[in-house]
Image (cartoon, rainbow, N blue to C red; front, side):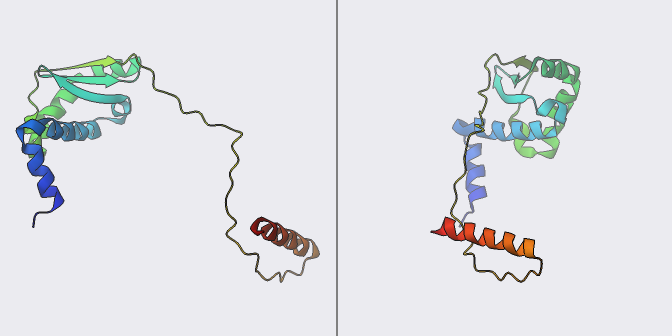
Length: 148
């Protein structure tokens, strides 16, 4: 019986699914890049044996141009350490900044969280201090009111 990893690796080697193997190699490449560059990469794709880096910010493009030789060296050495990445046959690498804005996630400050009270209010109030004793009893009343 074959395990799932074996089945997936066979599928990746199929000629029609060669891009899946390339995408896995691109993920490895992104992980090997310095954080100053990898944090700004939106995605990577190939076209006509050119590897395109789509970046999030113009300063990332400057950083990319500065570290172009490092990226080429990583691409050459990645084949030695990851034999599945021999599928990367590239002549050139280029980068550009995407003109599409990423949607901002808005967090509303007026959000109220409603949850079911998990406590039953059945605890012993053995404090000797009067103020604390009253405070614990008020907490018990709130718990019982929330459970009702």
